[in-house]
Length: 191
Image 1: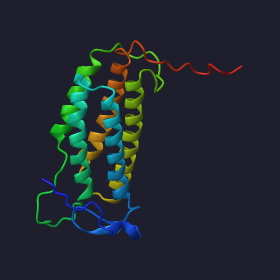
Image 2: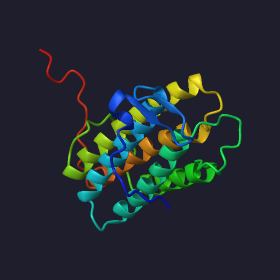
Image 3: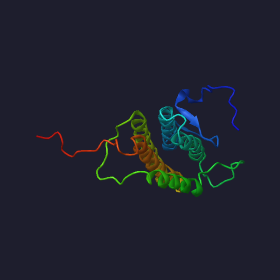
Image 4: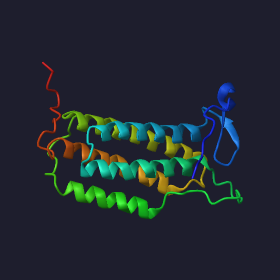
């Protein structure tokens, strides 16, 4: 368990930060961008949960938030090919498969799409769509990291890819199981 007794360290005052292996990098490092965007997605999922309090969807997202901390820890500790002196936390294929199970379970309640939908509708749906778009950005940042670090755990990308799909499905669930989805009408405002 992590124990934080002091919140500020002054390490970042010069634009640098420490990774989980205690190596130091710029705060603009692609790795920091990746796990920072995962943190941002996690915060927005917390915002979405506040509109879903006590529901089965809320319980699913609580588990996801915990797993996103695991994913951030995975990204924060580079695989340098040497023993770091501790076992780094890594996202597993089992966690990705569990997300797929959740997607299938919730999607079974929805009618198939016959149009793209707008990121709108209920308050909870709009928050989930926001979380989805930030999750997609976290995925893009992680893919960019993967392009420079071939030892990156590939399950991190797979997890983020599935999570954005789950958030999309849950956004539809929050729109009266898709009945209140706001459909895109191509060219609707053209003359």
